[in-house]
Image 1: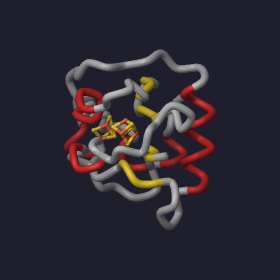
Image 2: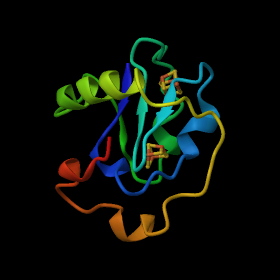
Image 3: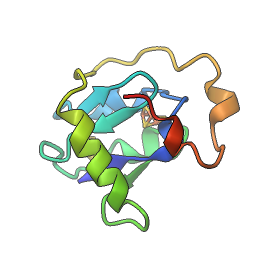
Image 4: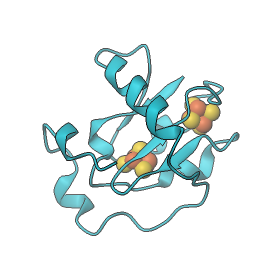
Length: 104
Ligand code: SF4
Ligand code: F3S
């Protein structure tokens, strides 16, 4: 599966959701996640993210994010249409150590 990782936090551009053929994305307050059970590994969402936050779950460092994506996909509502990014997305894009800022 592909997974959403740290740099989505406080950006949430949502360009990714429009292209997913099987609507795997789920929306939290300041991040999206992919349901790894329904992701068909097509990879089309990965280049769409302006924050480069989407990676294959086999990528280096992706393992904790796989668990986070699995956990929140079960509780957050689905999102399949693009919405406005968070207001200060540009300021947060690329900042390090955003994992503790993830809102559930
Ligand atoms: Fe959806 Fe494909 Fe991205 Fe998986 S890899 S979340 S199926 S667009
Ligand atoms: Fe997040 Fe990138 Fe989608 S910032 S909402 S994974 S386009």
